[in-house]
Length: 152
Image 1 (cartoon, rainbow, N blue to C red):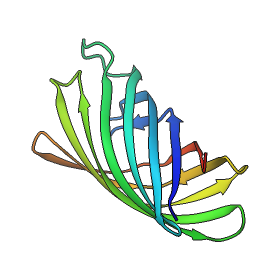
Image 2: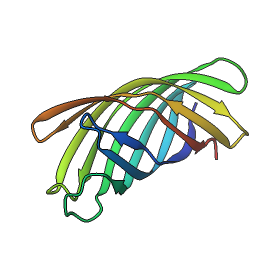
Image 3: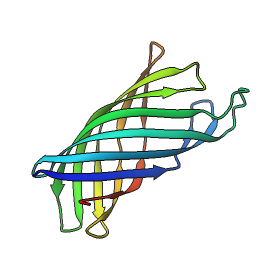
Image 4: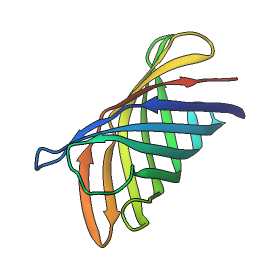
């Protein structure tokens, strides 16, 4: 309780949409968590990303994404090195190559945390996300994994 947890992740998600178009992105997501009670974390996260490759040519420059989000996670200790968790949150982001489009994400989902050392863990998450953009709603399931620093 009362522990600050600076963390973050670097990911290279490869997305395939329903038309078979490929997109590869680079995402940097630094965050700061605070354990308000044992195993209950509140987190503030930023999101910085860029499109590296796409099979769709639309004449635009590389897309840059930035955003800010809030999340809550509850951890269930399984063993000394494994923790299962349930998380939920929301995120606001801007995509500059799409006419300054604003996206709003709401997500919920489980994950596993594998402690590699006292300061490093591997996080496997499977969030179910609903995205609101330009009056539409998009649902997707995404597998995220990344390293994060704990208890610095």
